[in-house]
Image (cartoon, rainbow, N blue to C red; front, side):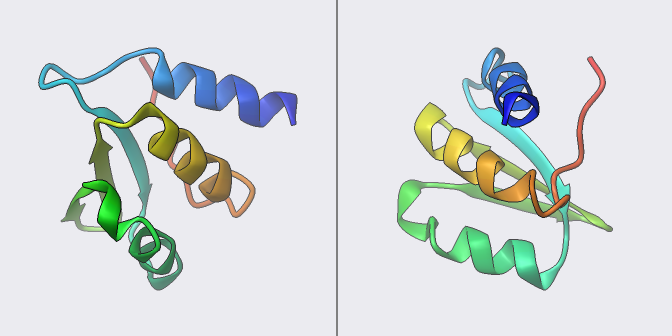
Length: 80
């Protein structure tokens, strides 16, 4: 669980220039099904080839989504 907490802390420690938290995930049906559950939370998604860029202003939403993506190995980790 510490590994997941460390990743979530790293993701939520910074925002993009427009004030959004950003997740980069694998672009597949499993990820789209998870995102569908958050459709009322103002997620902005952009598919670029094999990756899906997910943006949201809500820290809690990004934390919840990241915690669901990490164990399924669907989150693509970013290098700073």
